[in-house]
Length: 231
Image (spheres, rainbow, N blue to C red):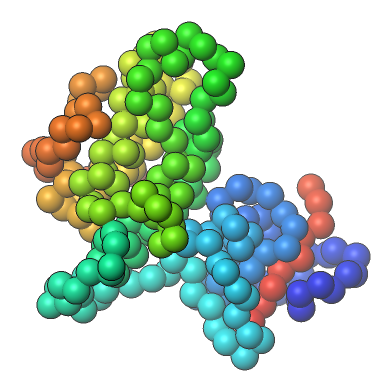
């Protein structure tokens, strides 16, 4: 469907793409990956899409990016951007963050900061963190963009540490944190092996003391929608 088209929506049984954004599970104007069934809002994808591909241009989402080959390619490329992560490390962290967002149900409580009106939370939690902050700090134009992988990993782990510190173990949000943390460690084991470690409830490092720990083995683990296809 071309951008801006306005016709009664009807699911094409031959359309291989999903109906809902892989990040927010909502409809609307979505861009389709040409290499997998997933679709995204331009602002939901990581990195945010600043322009739409042309009709003759195939588009590949970050989930389809070949991270393993990217690592091999960049192993001899030590040049850093003027500020922040290397090109390879930026791609890897973007991929990991998008994977976390696409784990929809588990990531829901950790996407945004806890409301400031919940004063009792901020009396306990001194270093609030959320996925939205991590996403902002991965933007190339962010003034406090990540300078190293340690900072990225530390911020993600801080999300889980805060959750374990404030919420009882028998709560749903605590269990969501365990699910997402386990998934995060599997992603680290796959792409940033030196930063993966056996998770320990409630004893993550403080923000100023990041240290890679012992590695662990990965576990096995309505409405109208306008889709943009580019071929």
